[in-house]
Image (tube, rainbow, N blue to C red; front, side, top):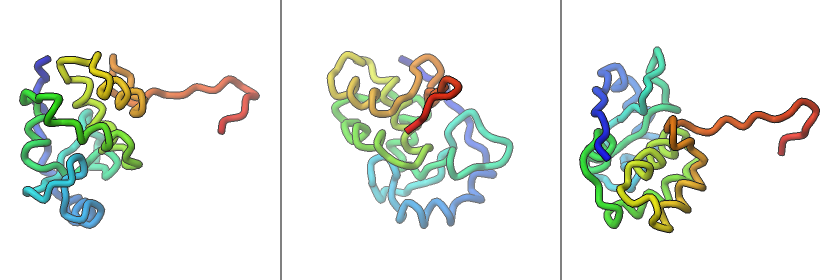
Length: 135
């Protein structure tokens, strides 16, 4: 499935120090130290937001920008979808949604954990009924 490449904004570089500290200088998807660089998850908010930005290595950035990905090379995404960082979790889920074989059991399980709507590529919104308790 081909994805449209999204041009990253230069303003996201303003988050560089914060993201480098947060990531420990590693890709927040695969944990590689291979030149991680800020990558903003579209759609972009008005101002760069750390909750919509992650550090990604060259390979992960290429995949996020639409390069072909082989599922066997991306197994680490099954762990990334458990991240407590919204940008990491969402980016990992979007990459998994782009895998050619969503019937592969590990891909399906990882997508279930991410709780991302396949139609929108965004987190599902839980709407509670009035008077019900949320846990």
